[in-house]
Image 1 (tube, rainbow, N blue to C red):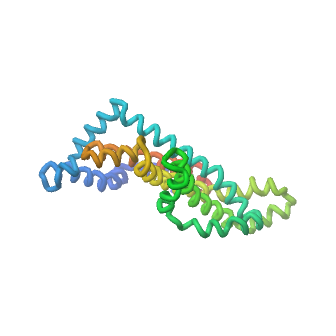
Image 2: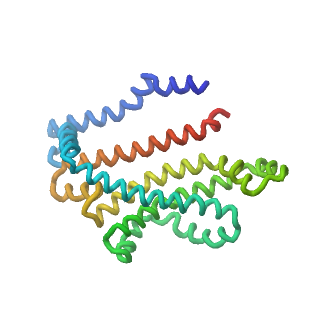
Image 3: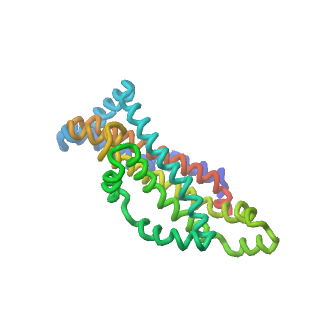
Length: 261
């Protein structure tokens, strides 16, 4: 199947219908059940009410403020994780000394829930932007770091030996052999880290913030403003899906050579 044929297949009407059927059914149930009283409309307002509230807070500027604040927090922590985790992952495989120093730390904390450490972060750094930045950075770092390490270790030794047999320099070996082979792993790590950073952001804003989408969800739940709460959740889901879609497309474009093999 050629790339053009595959693209036509992916976006065929039948494919789109199958992909949207389940979501459409769920949304229809969301509208009908509260309307008929099968589910209490107080705790789960009809979808139409939620969308009306989403429209209202979108155009009165309230939602825009919280989204901007959440994006700022998420992006700062996420990109800090990227700048640290990717180089560290390469160095841990490239240098035995770096590996011996950092590997015990990685093995200790890689499976530790970052949300479980959030109370400790609050105790040390207090309720402020620093604590939120640290928890997002911490959450986003680990999946990306592990992905980079796995990617470097998965590089075919034959390619490395062939490059070294041609007296290639260490820098050239890295940029021509190691880095291209690890790109799929890095992109996968970036997607996982982005998703987890959004989860950490919401938890951080729920526990210690006066702004942001996490705070808005938590605050409206306590005020029984359920339509606004669900509108905020829809916004958060949309943001997460947009980020994942963007990174998935980037991965497909940068690894087209892998699918053509």
